[in-house]
Amino acid sequence: MSTISGSFSETTLLEQRVLAESLMFDDRIKQQYIPNIAIIPALKSIQTANVMAVGRAAKKDVDVEVIWQNVCGREAEECGGCNIGGNPSSTNAEDYALSWCRDYNFSENEEDYLTNEFDIDTAVAKQLIMADKTLSEAYARYTVAQLEAFKGINALNTNAKGIVQGSDTFIEPAFWSASLVAYFNRVAILNKLTSPIMISGNNLYEQFIVSQASYANAGGKGDWNLWGSLKMFFDLFNIDTVNYPNLVTYMLSMGSVALANKFYNPGVPARGFEMTRYTMPSQFIPGFTFDVFYKDSCTEQNRLTKHDYTVRLKADLFLNPFGCDEGNTGILSFTCGTPTP
Image 1 (cartoon, rainbow, N blue to C red):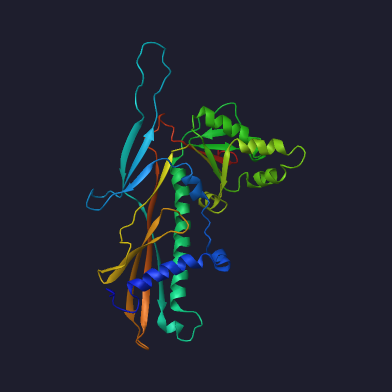
Image 2: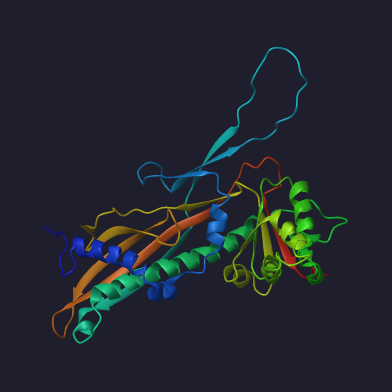
C-alpha cells in the first residue's frame, strides 16, 4: 500500500526514475542531455583517497571522512645487519563538511497533459535527466574554481619557458605546441609530482588533435610520441568559462584531490514533513547520488494534481592536506599569456 497521498505512489516515483535511465539509451534523447563535464573523469582518474559518508548523528557538522594515504620522508639507508622492514606509510583521516550544494526545481501539472500526446511520467523522467545534467555541469564548474584555489607554486621558475608569478605560471602563446610537453615533463619532475595528468581547456587542444591525426604521416610520429609521455584531458566548456578571459591548463599529481558526495534521503520513497523523500543515482557522475524531494497539490480547474520536485546535489572537491613537501599542493596552473607588470 502506498504511504503517499496524491496520484504518484512510491512505485510510480521509482518507475519514473527507471524511465529516466531507460530514456538515456534512446540516441535522439541522449544527445539532448549529455552534460559537458570532461573535468570530472579526469579528477576521478587521480583520486586515491577513500571517501566515507558520516551519519548526521555520528559527528556534528561533518559530512564525510576522507582517508589520505601518503608515503613521505623515505630515504635510502646503508646496507647492514639482519633487520628487515621499516616505517609504514602514513594513513591520515580528515573530517569535512561539504560546502557546495545546489538544487534543481521543477513542476509538472496534470492539467497540461489532458490533450497532450506525451504523458506526464515521461515529462517527469526527462526533467530528472535534465536535473542530473544541470547539477553535474554546475559541479564541474565548481571543481575548476576549487583547482584555482588549490594551486601551488611552480618550483621551476628560472631558465624555462614559464614565467612564475605567485601561484601562476605564464607561458607566451608562441610556446603552446607539442614541444611544450617537454617543459611540462621537466616541471613535473622538479616539482616532485607523482604520475601527473594535464587538464586543459582550449590550450593545446587543436595541437593535440592535429598530432593525433598526423601520426600516420611521415614525421608525424615525433609530436605524437611527445603527447604520449604525459596524460592529457580536455574540458572545452568549464575550464575557460570559469577562468575567463584567461586560458588555463592544470597539472595535477596523483592523489592530490578527492571528490566527495553526501545524500540523506532513503533509497525507497518515504513520506515525511508534508513531502516525499528518496534518492536518485547520477547517470553522469558514477558514484554520486542526488536527494529528491516530491510534493503534490490540487489544481483549481479540474481538481487534478500538480507535482513539484526538487533534486539536490551536495558535493565538494578536497585538496590532500598531507602532502610530503610543504608548499607543494600537487596542483600547478599554467596560463597562456604574459604576466601583468
